[in-house]
Amino acid sequence: QVQLQESGPGLVKPSETLSLTCTVSGDSMTSSYYAWIRHAPGKGLECLGVIGPDGRPYYSQTFESRTSISSDTSEKQVSLRLSSVTPEDTAMYYCVKDVGHWGQGTQVTVSS
Image 1 (cartoon, helix red, strand yellow):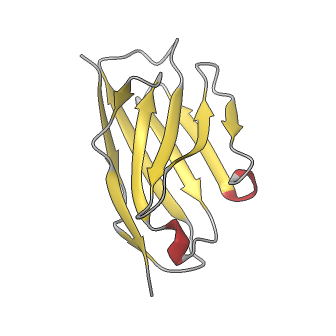
Image 2 (cartoon, rainbow, N blue to C red):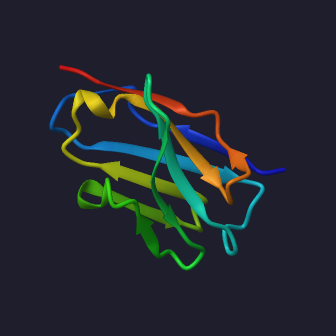
């Protein structure tokens, strides 16, 4: 059974870099795509980017300039870094495997 667990700081200050980690269990990560998706209050779902089994990331054009996604198959982790955050980046952040498997999400608030 695939399980995804997001973790990271719940509070980040404006202009800082947000770093989140998704810990994967029940999957070898050798044939799956992992995405970071967020849901901000009053907005729809937004995909920040996806990383393939070869470790190559693909970024949404909206976030490309300040997003970095990486994976470590030995540690079974997928990481997200979002730089220069603003209060508009306050959202629930989800790690998603192959569209169908979602983590529980982690709330991130950007505030001074």
